[in-house]
Amino acid sequence: MDFNSKDYQNIKLKNFFKTNGFFLWFHSAKLDSNKWIQMEQNLKKSKLNYSKVLNGVTLKLFKNSIFTNISPIICSFVLFVGSNFKMTALQFSSVEKHLNPSFKLISAKLNNRIYSTSQLKGLPEFSYRKNMFGLYNALDQHLKTSYLLTITKKKIASK
Image 1: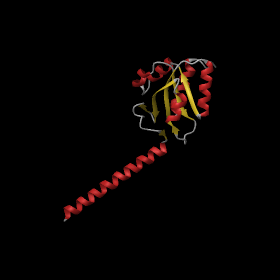
Image 2: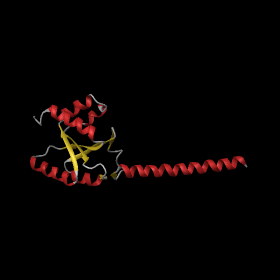
Image 3: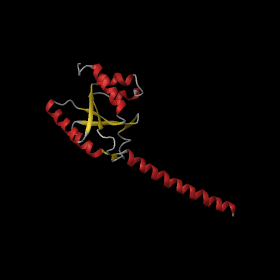
Image 4: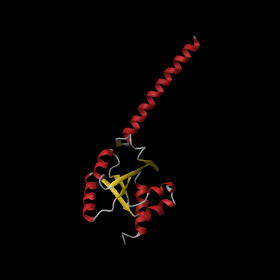
């Protein structure tokens, strides 16, 4: 089987989108083989998996999918980087530090939604459990305050 064919890359990209619920999109510079080997080693040390596909294959896939509005941001080689382990928290600063010289972050995919870099600025790390725990605490606090406000209004109205 020819691993460089467009059909194989298309199947590989579809499989990557289906199996990974969260990953980061990077524009990648065209690197020579020595620099690319070093970059692969950095990705493996950081426990990250990746998929690098050609521009045309990515655009064809997005044309017939729910991501049709995303195709204008793809203008060169695109690298999809995700975590090997589902339970680990992904530190945004460490990933950016390892990939900064030759890769530029475009966006992130989380549960079939695409988030831009401006939407990701406030997040120091990507951990589903920690973010959901923070949301639960915020909702709990707001529900308690609204409950206290309704009780005091009822007491005032009944007197």
